[in-house]
Image 1: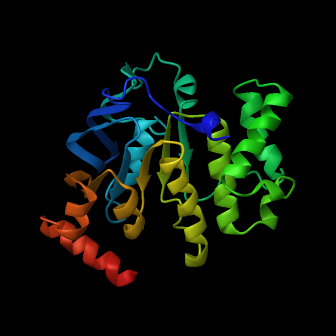
Image 2: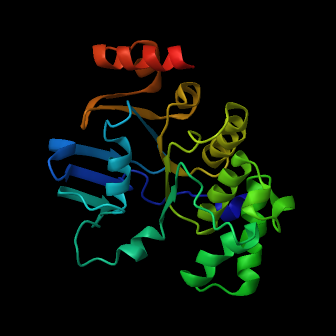
Length: 261
């Protein structure tokens, strides 16, 4: 099972994804301000993006897989410019999974059917291969016993784990998590974070995570980006960002988060 999900990238010295001078405006509002955001995400990296609500974190994530179109700038995935309007973005998105705050499961479909749908519609897999993948990913998130349940019969944490399993079944090279635990009760957060830790430690996934879960970020991130008012204010390793924050705005943000926790 482990081997089927593992990601050992051949070109570990090249960025998996690269963002160059990316800006995004919604009419008058600059969600990501000029001169724009530039960053490189390496294979098997766990990049955590932190910042207050409205700082541009989720906008950046959505621009990176063109769920929303950047106003300017470029995004490259494995060296190919995916902001080129002539590219088949659906083909690209097969390799970039996305886990949202809200679980986005179809309530009228069982867990099995929710996972099977994109495998059939997008990848055109055989029924046998689909069943094999469903078993593998649900065992990975410890939910195979819920395969015939409907989302409404599951807890919020279980629904989010099904959403993660659905992404894993597509076998992406990169997974974005947009505040995956923010809609959950605190006692359900841990089970989702545990699955995310497995993706890193056992399966070597490349993850980009927008989160307020500071202990998780400290433990799992290879690098942390702090965004504020549409800009990257600071970037560094978790030990520097969280233990010795050198930036006043970062210090203020972290103290607020810790107060809330």
